[in-house]
Length: 332
Image 1 (tube, rainbow, N blue to C red):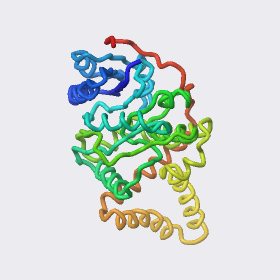
Image 2 (tube, rainbow, N blue to C red):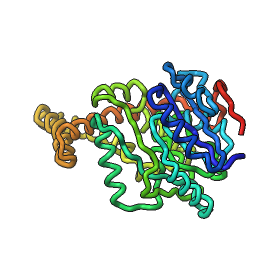
Image 3 (cartoon, rainbow, N blue to C red):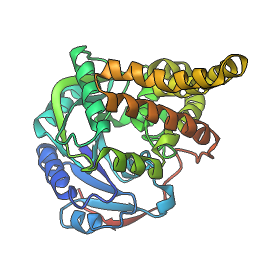
Image 4 (cartoon, rainbow, N blue to C red):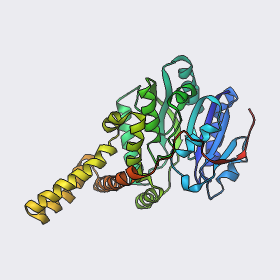
């Protein structure tokens, strides 16, 4: 076992993987740690570029199994660090943050994971603009203990062993929340620092192109998938309180059921028009942007449809080994 493993999860990250890998190798040098690139069957040059560095490289065998939850679990299977950091392939890790996170895990034995804030390097679309606003609101609260470590963090392997597996391979999103909920159910703590952990070079896409990408990648199935995961994970009550999109997806169905019922009993056209316009107007006022308000309401409805579809999807046992190919193995 080494002190620190960094898992870089990738899918078609040829433009970013070199930067992410260099930052990870620089960050683990103090502990002679390891870097594992866990690739979800990329179709570009991501794997070839990763092989140029002294990193272990493993590739998902079946592209049909691609999920956000697959990469961390695949990398975890091939890592041996006492502490494990999850880094996206489009991120650049701050070595000083990692040193601070390691020192906290060394001293605070009830802490299972330590995260930091994400510096967004691009804001080309409404999704990223909304994400930046959410991060800013969370940061102003000056919280220490948190529900989950969105965007990655450094985790204690013994805590992961206690909850059975690192990342739920069935999830198209919310894999960080699922892990955090399972850890907190066992009494572990998660800590978010004010320190910048990573620079994030997200998709250089416009709003609607990125939205279409999210639809094709299955991201909108994630609320229903998470609901299913919460049942065996025994955190359903936490989920309904803490993950806004889950009750919101259920609420969208209830909203339209009530609106349609009211329309059949009164004036159909005015009621339905009001039902269409009112949520957009409220969100436009709240976000101070008509575009962002419309985009928010649209994604709620996509999530509501995806919630039902995700709820009905078959689950694979999350702790089962993920079939993969070892492309490069670097000894420690």
